[in-house]
Length: 359
Image (cartoon, rainbow, N blue to C red; front, side, top):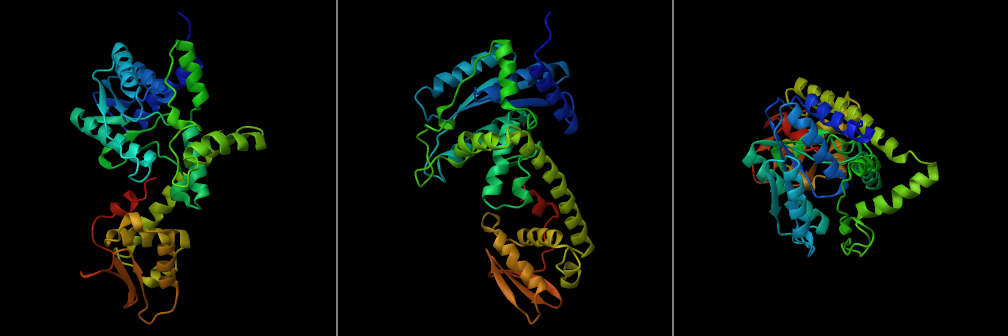
């Protein structure tokens, strides 16, 4: 018997390491999200190999967005393929996507994650997706283009909660593996994958101004240009950057959480002034989210103004945040929900602010 292709060995090892790092006990059902593209098919083959051998039952879900005439037939083929290779059950879920609801890409993503969450709950499973180092590099570049901080540039986490479903664990075992490697492994096994035209530059899906969707433009224009400009290695370097930033951001978040606890969960101005800005602003964000600030509307400039309130002169100054007013009072920053009672930021659990930062 010939040895497996090195890419397939690496993929299987990545699955085992991901489960071990997350502390997933044997017997836990693994739900693999499989679109039929190369990344998710490579994931499915690796999980279907490594999972049962280590005591993990494996199921799959394929989401049919119904946006192309051939999508139903493609989803059916993927299900039959996965059933033949041991997925039990292999599930297809059809969703309805409203392209005008925040843009077609965001609307499809929201519906897809909602369908995956529903199936994961039905099966009592954790979820695995096939995001690769290439996807991670795109995420880092998108964060850089938006002028985001470490919270965004750190990219996708290898283990986190499923978007929109904090009760469901999501693992991304392939964040350090290139898409080209996974495709080489599939070629070695004689497995063909579907190419989704919505991911290409000729896609009819467009941004509001008619330009390419940002991630499509990053994938097909920005990254190839960057690779040519620096002679290759850009994707791997960006993926490493994400991992390093994640470690730094985690350390700063831990420092912020500990310092906030030492303040008794209150925004003590004197204590805050003694902290580095990177720690101080994390505390302020955490406290703002706890106090009822609308998280989806909390912007970087809100935190900057809140920090100015801490570092500036006294005199009972205040600023408005989304749904909350922050004021200086008695040597502290008090967060007052509009029409409700005053809070010093100490209500609710210490995990809320951190959970809200997930990329």
